[in-house]
Amino acid sequence: MTTPVPRRPVRLAVIGAGSRGMTYGREAVRTGQAVVTAVAEPRQLRRELAAAEFQIPVDRAVASWPELLARQDLDVDAVVIATPDRQHTEPALATIARGLPLLLEKPMAPTEAEATRIVEAAEQAGVLVCVAHVLRYSAYTQTVLGLIDAGAVGDIVSVDHLEPVGWWHQAHSFVRGNWRREDQSSPMLLAKCCHDVDWLSALIRRPALRVSSFGSLSHFTPANKPEGAAARCLDCDVESRCPYSARRIYLAHVDEPAAQRWPLSILTEDVTEAGVTRALREGPYGRCVYDCDNDVVDHQVVSIEYAGGVTASLTMTAFTPMAFRKTRIFGTRGTLEGDGYTVSVFDFLTGRTTTQQVVDPQDAEAGEGHLGADAALTAAFLAAVRDRRPELVLTTPAESLGTHQIVWAAERARHRGQVEPLV
Ligand SMILES: NC(=O)c1ccc[n+]([C@@H]2O[C@H](COP(=O)([O-])OP(=O)(O)OC[C@H]3O[C@@H](n4cnc5c(N)ncnc54)[C@H](O)[C@@H]3O)[C@@H](O)[C@H]2O)c1
Image (cartoon, rainbow, N blue to C red; front, side, top):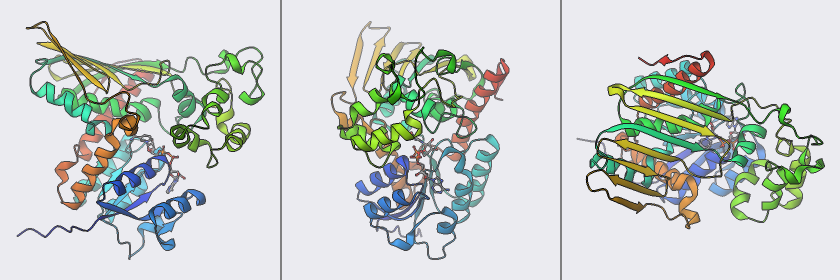
């Protein structure tokens, strides 16, 4: 006889109530299937805002995760870990040790050794770990996979995939912001494209055999600082001619609710013109992009060979408009092109192109949260916890480790200037 499944809401603890932790908390509550009953967040204001929004009792809104996870009376059913990249491993191991299902932000961990510890601990304890590879969960991905399964392009021979980071997103996150330095966060490929490499694996469904990669930090360096540029955009005489001007990226958008949610809320809690101006004057986001302490790449290509000779190329570049990933799949019977919103299939037999729109580009709400994938992943995780159906989570931790390993191998290949074997 199976144990009866509880129908009460899933009680969640959020560790790291920043941008992502709040996203999962909100999405979870929005399903009507969950409540956030505990939070661990060192920043007092963030902690208080999270506690107020989710109506968390004061004694369950704490500054440190060890304090939270040590509580004998911790009445939660699952944990979300959305701490900075280098602070995933220890809370993940502690959550697994308590036997609690875990939604773990990507990257799983900064190193292969740490990620392997998480996988081994989860497997030994039999604990559900869902690594937040959100792209797998979108309606767009399900449409693409459905077409491939239906034979729309025949057998996949090669894939060409672009991650267009976007010029100002690069400046925000990877030049001025939290992911600008490898020693403080991750190599850019791990931070930005572990999703893409994972997505390619979902598509191709063959083991990756070897990988090569090239890329560098070419533009956001002191050598490219324009003549007469100041250290901060608010003091700069040539700022009006600079596409990366913090005045243009942030101050020009203070009245827009979407911009207030992101990226302005990353600069300051006070997203008024005065608050943003203060942040640009005093904080890291007002710095000249040619005068920061950044070292992550601004463009990188990766070539992967899979079993059976299938190949994929991935280009990640800063120097694009803000857009969703674009993919071209080349098969033995046709090609498929997708951009997150629309999927087009060209059939070699009929010579016809069939196009379907999965997400309306005019529908701003549908475009949010990785085109609805944040909500879909959260719902899948909650259902897996509530109904004790781990298969609703689309990847095991071992599979996530496998796709992270392709990223680490690509980084070794880039640094060593050679092809790296994966098997
Ligand atoms: N799945 C995705 O698509 C996606 C997108 C963006 C970011 N991320 C990842 O999510 C993670 C969080 O990113 P973010 O954008 O929310 O960053 P963030 O800085 O907005 O949030 C991180 C929060 O963790 C808190 N924190 C720091 N140390 C902590 C500790 N010891 N215990 C508890 N909380 C702690 C910080 O104060 C901050 O509020 C990162 O690993 C990032 O790479 C994933």
